[in-house]
Length: 116
Figure (cartoon, rainbow, N blue to C red):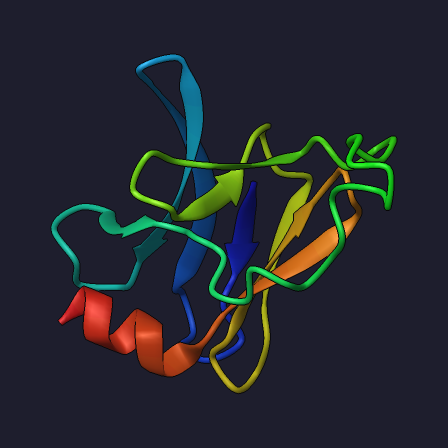
């Protein structure tokens, strides 16, 4: 998915999926006018691990909640490719995921730190 940044004219961001060791790893990539090439800002992980319940009171996985998984290092990531991406005027990037239907927000400050 590609988006036109409202922050910097001519800039674009995209969310790509890289297949690594049998998992789909979501990356945020950006391009700004003057860049020699697109810049991979790294893998997107979930910071708020309690944003949704994934198991019922019976301990079984909830239906339609299989779209996120935890890596061996404990970080949570999306399991499948994403549905869309949008950069807001404040520079935050929102990525739409499925199962459960969720919006992942990458804050502008985190993007600046990753891209510097």
